[in-house]
Image (tube, rainbow, N blue to C red; front, side):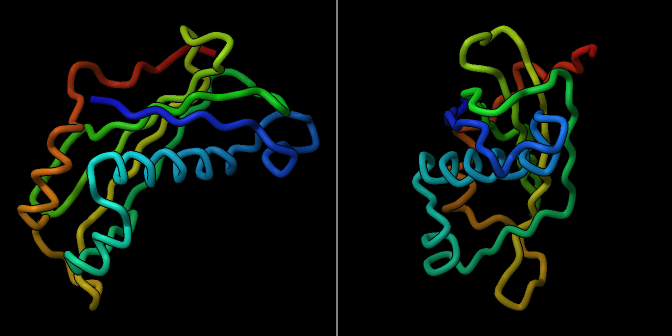
Length: 146
């Protein structure tokens, strides 16, 4: 299952050429990540305070396919691609609201569950139960041509 958020490209997201700066995609991914976990019933407060789990990123990637400009409304799909023993693969697809067939960027985070001492731990069963419902392995994010 996928979760989507919509967000406009803002002034701080563009570069001198007037297109979205690659770093801005991390902001978009962050918004989608938080809301995906929240939709699973796992706010970060719940994970930190109740489960004692933190989720540092150990791998981040992003591929860009089409330029995006100021004030374009983007839809970011977030979904879990793989749940390991202590890692979670979180995938993203970004599309313009006006052209939902066009993927402008894709991304991936690999998150690792750690305790408060930052030592890797297995994903707690209560967390795994919530997250597994949002795993989408139906298709990998396509690599679009420029």
